[in-house]
Length: 204
Length: 201
Image (cartoon, rainbow over all chains, first blue to last red):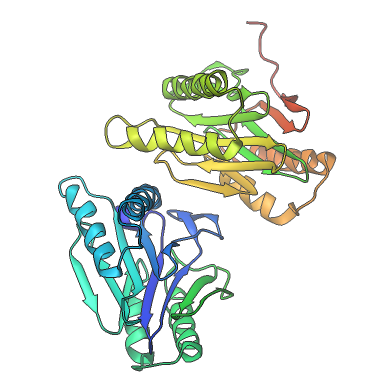
């Protein structure tokens, strides 16, 4: 079994009209065994920037700690929050530092740019950025997520419709992947507020 | 076939470990205590490579004590768990420790907590956790019978159910187990469950 499939994960971010949504599953497993059903994969960097880390959980936790450290240092020096594009470059640089002994993670970065334009991005485990205008996916359920998102996505969705679309896409995809699931976490971010919801899906 | 498991109750946390020290087909001793008392209100139940297990848990214990000496206050369970994860993570890509850890603790404001720490430094706060082949039986048993707010008696009853399951269903089941509890009065040994009386040595 691949090291990327050791813990199991599903992550997706989608762009709407002046808003974005990022969602993940909640399972933490060790190969075939489920350890926890309340694992947080997405974390807030600041009010307008979220990062989700799929792949090996230990590397996701280490990388998360390093990124929070770097962002806090940036905030102290620059006296402002990092822009999503800058943060994506930081993630990419941190990952490429370990080019020949990488972190086994695939991050999904989602944020609101300066003019409230949503920004989403994913990188592979060695930091190759993929910027997309519609949606990005990561994790063991990635292939299913591509299909579901492609079918359900419409440009310029309002937050409520975006929430519905992303929830359905996530739940449908994780149901086809034994290593991810047990519900979902979804964050819908607009320029004025951040809404966090927990999804109930098939609990298997 | 080391079995380590634990659960959290209202105002206590219980961890259980088997007590066999095994080398290939030989049982060296059957009263090996694998649950270390980290400090007054913390327990670390560890399973894995025997040398690494003792070395790593002692290292954590001494560093936790050092923190208390230097700073005058003890670490919280969360802090100790994160420190442990940090040590495992740092060693992971150099010289990994093959030790799985269940850390149970009681903090005055927070109450009881249990942390699951994998040998590859995956950290998660859990209500119930288990390592080893026994985990297949224990986790299922605990999923079925555990509910939040169990009394100590109910929890020990559940622990006994888990031990019975391990003894009857695991092919090389360890004969003896030790149960330790941590609550507001501190971390202490609760009971042994012996089906083979170990010798005096």
